[in-house]
Amino acid sequence: MAGVQTAVELRGQGWRGGITLLGDEPHPPYDRPPLSKAVLLGAPGSDPVDVRFDVDFGALDVELRLGERAETLRAETHELVTDRGTVPYDRLVLATGAYALELPGTECLPGVHPLRTLDDAVALRPVLEARQRVVVVGAGWIGAEFATAARQAGCEVTVVEAAPRPLAGVLPASVTAHMRDWYDEAGVELRTGTPVAALEPGVVVLADGSRLAAGAVVVGIGARPATRWLAGSAVALDPAGAVLADDRLRTTAEHVYAVGDCASVPSARYGRRLLIHHWDNAMQGPRTAAANVNGGDEQYDPVPYFWSEQFGRFVQYAGHHSEDDTMVTRGDPAGPAWSVLWLRDGLLVALLAVGRPRDMAQARKLITRSAALDPVAAADPAVPLKSVAR
Ligand SMILES: Cc1cc2nc3c(=O)[nH]c(=O)nc-3n(C[C@H](O)[C@H](O)[C@H](O)COP(=O)(O)OP(=O)(O)OC[C@H]3O[C@@H](n4cnc5c(N)ncnc54)[C@H](O)[C@@H]3O)c2cc1C
Image 1: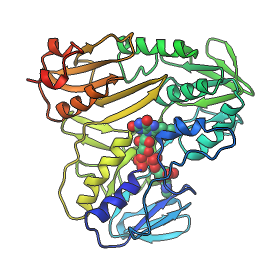
Image 2: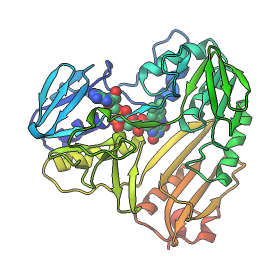
Image 3: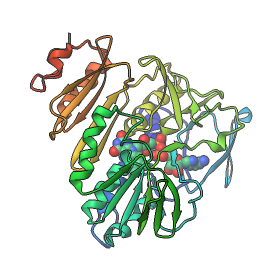
């Protein structure tokens, strides 16, 4: 996404030089969000949903080199070494995304699936078609979306989560308590506070000794920046492996930029570095990177935004909150549509919307301009958010 967007933006912003887009996957560039949704549910025997980006690389005069892996960066000589040879550059934009974490020791076990790539999603379609019994490891966004699709296909599904609740690292217990009910309603068994101890053929063994039969195991325990190939280069990485970009999306190597899931950026808005693994960031960052590659001096300080479709609900989150922020609930979280917002010193910093896209549309603007909100009025779901901004 971020690589394609960078090429599109560069041309759109008047870059006249050659553009080469390298990617190690064999497929033409494609969109990932449908992989945990529509792609899984294609009719038996049908082609997977077409997820290719609608971009004419020939018309943009972009050389697309697929199935080619970058292996070493020689920033001193402005060269990228790939598995096919050496590629010189004047400017380089890193957009290698992230890879899905695996359960240690399970990398080669049959029947254990990650869900990151088109190939991963296509490999999971027969599991759903055969209505196999599935154990999903991880009650995060991907785990919840896969569980939704698997239930829709008629699979028996158990989701196991090491933390005491779903999305424990992201949302407070008072919010996730309601999400737990979504699993129940969908007929998905959710087992929290139970890490996986071992995987045996056809069985997931939990730390409490329980043994869960599994025709297939889907692992959704997070992703890490795909940057191992940059270790030892002039591009500095943080301990989590993210490229340390500055607020112009420049890396520590001259004329090398970074966008999307592979890089963290310092956020002036939130006073901390953010590593954002969302579609919108891979869409927006390239606009700034392209401007700066083109000689501009633009700052990148986004309001992070993402959405998830799970258990028949459209969930959206914008901004960034911390435990110390004041939380205000709009509507009844036991119902189908409600929001939660977070205020810091009276200013709106984040919003979670479940089935309330209008709240989200208004909140994104309010968060962007750090609007002050009346917390009492904001708690009334009948009152538009924009009308309670001070
Ligand atoms: C299943 C799934 C569902 C998602 N759903 C949502 C959603 O509903 N909402 C949302 O906001 N976000 C969603 N996301 C997140 C969103 O898709 C990502 O944030 C976005 O794809 C990031 O784009 P990117 O270009 O940075 O990385 P990627 O899309 O990961 O692209 C990076 C590419 O670089 C390639 N690459 C890696 N290393 C090398 C190398 N050394 N040499 C050459 N090529 C390399 C990779 O193979 C990959 O093709 C989802 C992600 C997944 C996996």
